[in-house]
Image 1: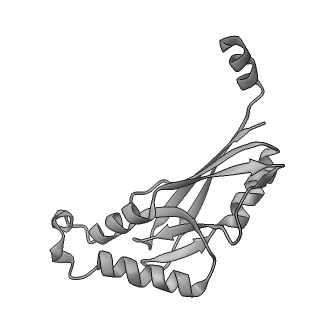
Image 2: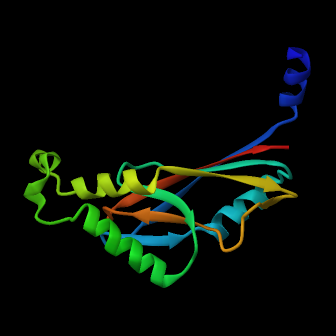
Length: 150
């Protein structure tokens, strides 16, 4: 059994890429589905998995519908859960930061997603899209994309 598994893993292919974002606003949702699809094509992997991971603790990657009303609702809901101001409500901000709310928003929205690759394409359900969520923008941020399969 171990020998078969070792031989199977030998045929695996990998692709690692990084996307970089410079969001001009403090908070924004960016649809990155096309960027991820292009990387899946570049990988030439037909069957596998695609990990998309925010590399910063004040940013998120999540899957949902690309609908502006929903994005507005997310913004309103997240701000209700963890308002930015007043910044002195958060102990974390005693360090000189003003982004405690961004850490909390990221915790709710999640760090990463994993999407199946079937027949060389992202295997989405109806309306599913991949989003980068920025909660403490105005500086360079990265997203890791790791694709594995055969």
